[in-house]
Each structure stands twice: as C-alpha cells, then as structure tokens.
Length: 296
Image 1: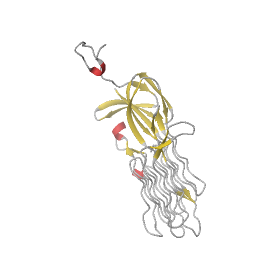
Image 2: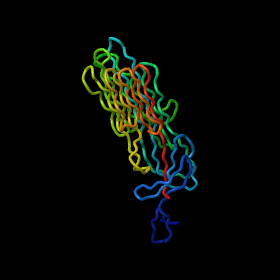
Image 3: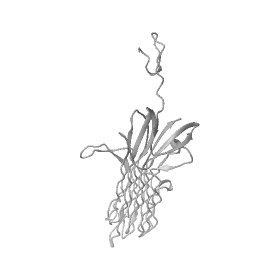
Image 4: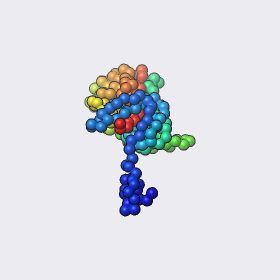
C-alpha cells in the first residue's frame, strides 16, 4: 500500500483506509442512551472490573475519582475552634481513546468518615481506565485551634502515577474555602473544593459563623444523557456556633451544626465529598464511577 492511510488516496492507488470508528465492548452495567441525537451503548462501572473489548476502536470515557471525607473537630473549651472542613469532590475527567484489547477499570474509593476528634478527613482515591485517571478528592481539615487562624479545608484532587513510593501530582484541583476561629467555640470551617469550583469560605460574624458551602461538581448529563446530574461536588464545612455549610449542587454531604455530625454524600452522588463534623463524626465521601460509551 502506498500513501493511503487515514483515508488519503494518492495518485498511484485508489484504495484507502476508512477513518477510525468506534469499537464494541462489554462490562459494568449496560444501557442504551441517546445524546444530541446520537445513539450509544453506555457501560457504567460502579466497582472495579474489566472492559472486555470485542471489536477494536474508539471509546469515550468519563471517570470520576472518589470523594474525600470531611474533617472532624472536637470543641476545646476556652480556645478557638473552627469546626471540621468539608471533603473535596473527586476530579471528573473525559477522554476518547483507542482500545484494541481488554482494559482494566479501577473505580476510586471514597474517603471514610472520621470518628477521632481533631483529625483531618480521609482522601478519596483515583479512578482509572488503564493509564487514564481522575484523581480523588482531598480530605477536609480538622480546623484551627488558635484564635484568628484560618481552618484547613478539603478540596482538589490528585493522581497517583504509580511507583514506590507513588508520585502524587495535582490534577484539576480546586481549593477548599477558608474557615475561622475566634474566641471560645465560635468558629466555622470552609467547604471542600469541587470538580468545577472552589469551596466557599465561612460566612457571618462572631457567634453566628456558618460553615462554607461545598464547591460545585460537574454535570455529566452531556455525556450520559438525561437531566442534570452532578458528580464530584465538595462537602460543606461545619460550624460550632451556627449552621453547617451545604454541599455543592446539594449533592455531597452537609457540614454539621453546633455539636452535630457531618452528613455523608449519597452513594449515587458519585465522587462527592462528605461534610465536616463537630465532636462526633464527619461525613464520608462517595465512591467514584467510570462511564464508557461507544456509538451504535
């Protein structure tokens, strides 16, 4: 064959190779969808598994890392305390890749809730299809002990590139919001960063400081069809003297109020962060998800 690749036809030949088309595969949970008038088969992985390729070709992939857990603050009598910050939402990453053989799919795990006081939240882990990855959300900070010091916040995401020890690199990270502690048990923490927006700062004055809202997530309906559906939103920060912050897009965990626990992200709100907690427990994040689609 002469210069006939990618559909180019030379003056010496009339044969050509058609442009690369979509492949066919199985794995996860299969459904039929239509997006912008185009029909696809959608494979949804909510747990790790294998993408079994029966016909080589292109595949659209959207991966969501596991959401981080909120931090937990134990109120200290006589000292400043800013509550537990919200957990960060996992990154949401999209690509189209050519696959000619089976691929390993790893679904990122959520950050587990924290039950030991003054402890940062647990980080979520990355979701992957072979070497393509979406990082897990950061864990929320435990809050500040000293008056007028900003509390730590969750947010952002990382990718573990492998190796021993693993190399961690920033990946589409959005910071968490700021919290503040002033006086005795009057503080509030920031919200966790989401996949498309930073976490909100605390709001309000001394004695009535509210936790920051979680950062916004990603609407995945443009990939999977249907109505708006957000993944990777941040959790809300807690408040010791007032109300906790709400989760980004109302899909993650809310921050605890006064001596209350942070709430966990609902399992189907994939990649969302958990709410910061006070005294008892923080909220857990939600596991990630991997979507694979191909045209039919």
